Length: 394
Image 1 (cartoon, rainbow, N blue to C red):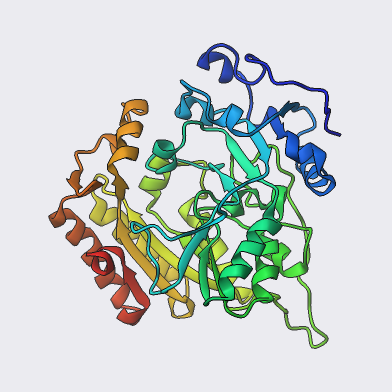
Image 2 (cartoon, rainbow, N blue to C red):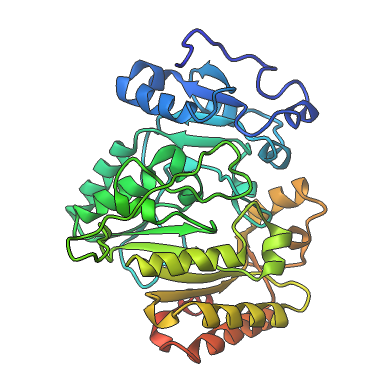
């Protein structure tokens, strides 16, 4: 149960120094907004989440920004020992898609954030430059987001990225949000959603079974999450049935093992992601493969070439819905913040070019990397199924 008498103190979660914060384990402290405690539905959801961390210290706060927006926080150090904040999101809940993100040819492109920050720890992630805190916020008022989407659907069809500022698949066992989005999308024929992930060994069968079971991605960082063991529903003739329509798109970011090991910390391995792709296809899910962002690394030609050989050997790419290709790009403001906090990161400190406030590789390197990927994909799939960021945003 949540102790409603707890009060936030200056030293409870962090200590008076960043060094003290690093002594805590992930989610050793959980902050709960006052609004959550006063609403029976939110409180019940919060207690479900907190039950996964029986040793956590639960702290009552007035507003999530009281903790998340504190001055002089160190995002990088905090991410090694994240606190969890349970809150109710207010104001606008659904936003037009950003220009630096691919719309995949959809006119009415939007995104929403059910949470802030991510369980995974990719060095190049723009969240490190956008947020003042490395702690994770989960918003419990998912139904309010649904209502805002329904209002948009009265005007036009909607293509919505629901895992935009985080990786919902990584914590599905905690929230059940991916399953709720699937159910919501199935009830609204003019809605298409994308769930993007870098998780490996995803238990997709739990989505097929039904609500309440959840996905457990089983990454190395999920020490506090218990694995789910479920069976797939079957029809009378023995064939597997899926509750997922083709409008639920699961988009996997695939990167060479070098990039995964050096820059995409705590994420699923390339092999693990490929296994998840194969399982998703086997169960009838719609799958998108994202080679975006492509990251320049030593001998990148060989690294990406080996990755594509593995992809073609193990994934039936003719069953993939479409493909996304794009190289690293990031806003000037975010990269400035990241460079200040990550002086030893090769991917952050790389001498990118600045083009109207967006940092990216040189045009020569960008074209070489992306053209090589597109040409490789064209050996196996029709070009019209390939969406290249640089070509659609120039």
